[in-house]
Length: 183
Image (cartoon, rainbow, N blue to C red; front, side):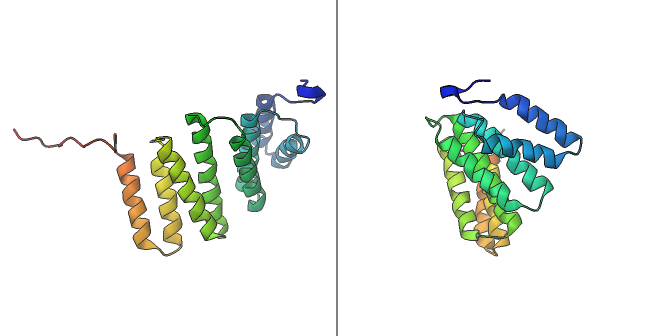
């Protein structure tokens, strides 16, 4: 399809469907090549679509190759694309949290840059708290706890586990009803 200013854009959903089909058939290299071509030729102009493509590329690199640096690069670029999106809607915050969680998990898998991973974890938690993303907040705390355990900071990890447990409770900010009220 024709894009803005005479450029060309693609149907992202059709591309991602083709990638899914290639992956299912064992064609990981062609799937990665297809998506890399799309991003290198700048065929996606909508920031949220750019994020979809970058997240899919990161998942392919992480899942099928040893190239975790390429996966991280696509996550960072996805984060840059989503931050270019105007507004701070709940949907955009959710996407940012998911990207940060993926970045932290890659830090853990590659055993590099623990200070960067901790910083990403804190940013992720702050976004989830500010946007009141109660479904993602426990995972953010658990991911940070996992990272802290790997770094040998067991006391801090225990604090994050406690936060995760509290965040996972329904209405964790509301007073809890007594499960055994007096008769």
